[in-house]
Image (cartoon, rainbow, N blue to C red; front, side):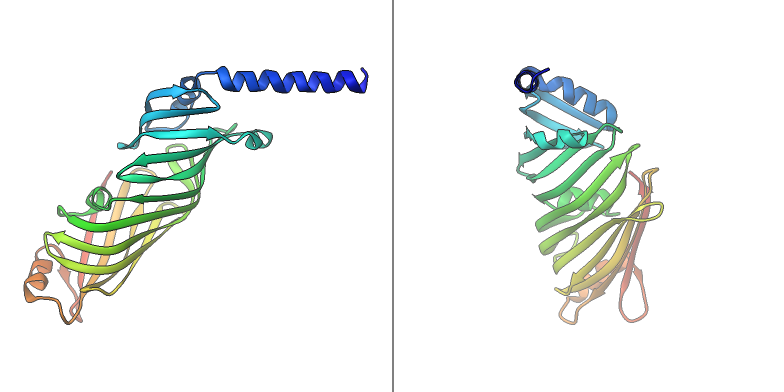
Length: 250
C-alpha cells in the first residue's frame, strides 16, 4: 500500500469515527454507564455521544440537574471515555472531568462545585439542622468501582458557616479534608473559631455504615442558653467541651 493510500485510509477512518460520535444517541452510552455504576440513574437524556444533556442525574439517592457534557477526544487514546461535565443545579453548581475506563472504573478529577449545606449536614446530623453559608467542594481525584470510592483526595470548605436551628451560632470557617483510608472513607473536620470551635472525624465504610465523632468547644461569648442546648444532644467533656457522636446506615 502506498503512503498516499495509507493516509486516505486513516483519514477515512477518522471521518467515520467522527460521524459515529456525532450520530450515536447519548442514551446508549448513559445506559451502559448506569449499568457500570451502582446507584446511578440518568433521566431525560438528549444529544449525542459527542455532546448532550440529562435533565436529572441521581446517584446513591442524591439528585442534581440539569447536567451537560462534552467529549474529550484525546482521552480515547488512553482507552477511556472521558467528558467535561457541568451542572447548573442551584443546589450543586460546578464542573468536573469524568471518565469511564475499559475496566469499568469511574474516574472523576478536577471537580469544583458550590452547594448548599443543609442536605449534606442533615445526612449525618442526629438532630434536624437549618444552616446558612456555602459549601465549596474540590475533588482532585476520585476512583469509583464496586459501589464505593477506591481512591479519594479532596476537600469540602464551609464558608461563613452558621447554624440557625436548633441553636443560632457562628462556626466561622469549617474545613473538611477527605481521603480513602484502609477500609473506609475518612473526613477530617476542623473549624476556625466563631462562636464555637470544632474538630472531629466522619468515617464511611463500603457497607454504608458511618460514624461521627465531633468535639464542640463553646467560646467565651456564647450564650448560656446555647451551652444548655448542647447538653441535650452532646456529651459534656472535661474543659467545657461537648462530644457529638452518632452512627448509622446510609
